[in-house]
Image (cartoon, rainbow, N blue to C red; front, side, top):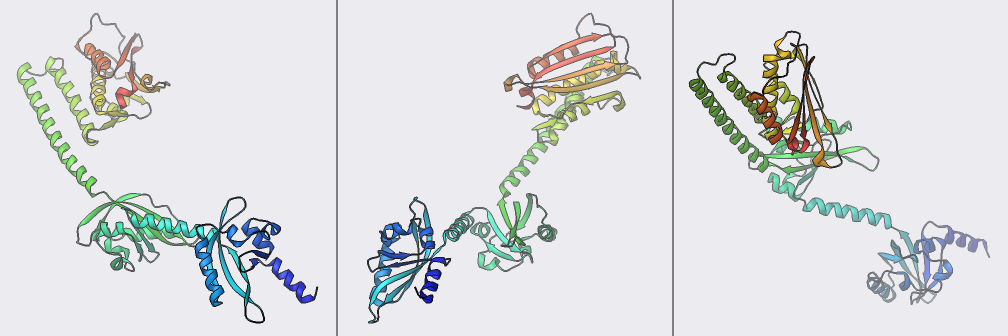
Length: 444
């Protein structure tokens, strides 16, 4: 072998690209190691095969058409196609095919230079897939550079903001910001530049016709191939209908609150006129006090649009007529549904009233500890909340000879409204009142 032949042999087998020589029927004459690696067959196996045997059937007609055109005209061609490897895996390649001619100018063979482009094709397919998702999304998806200029604008953005893409791309993103929040875009982009996370939030944007649009906005940084931040992507969802529904709901709740307060005021007036002056221990005073407890519970629910209230707040409101220093409150916060808020408020009101008349709250040294804990169960219906009212430092405790209206009210509310039970301990050191309630009756 001559030096030039040796050099050619080394180049042929050591090049980073695949090389294959075929006859005019497509049968392999020789292939290098890289081509063998790409196609997934040994060199000896390939020499028993044709190009058609490893080409994906869907790509073969186009490949043969271009190959025949080369044989007729002599001009080489380039093609991206798929090979099916011996293990069944599909590999994308970019082939540059050229004709080899003899001294008479006749085409006698073909040489193919092959590059594996599978990863590039996957990346391109992923980009196309994401582009299709973005283009067809109902959400407004736009991208901006670090100068806050709009770089992309999908159909969702056209629909939400009213500007076609050609009118938006290249313009400042501040064009869709209401004047009173014009600095919002600067704050967002400055946080993006430093790599800070921008929490999803609700805000407002301007439609082309000048009307405001309420949106839920998510912002993410855009990175270049070196990991540097080059801009931000924004996904906005129209929440105008929800905001209008909330406004209408608030109006209705406000009207409901006004009417309920009027009803309570009317009931208070009827009680005073019917039962006479409300002395400290009179029936009128007790009834008015209970009505006031319901009114406070009503105010708590109004703050949450009559959905729920926290147990901490319920206890705080129920104890508000008494000095804060006389109480110790312990327990994880629990969100309580509207029905249970009213029931618990009445229960705590009755316990407080009894303590103020006969128990710990009637003495300056008296103290009350209110605590609660969840009793877990594998059966959600069996999970319970245990609340304890524990008095100390008051007058000696004496078991009552009969149950008054307040005690009966407590028992009725706990059993029927809270699906619970009551255990009372008239301990000499102070009354202990344990209530165990179904957790689902509080939160369901």
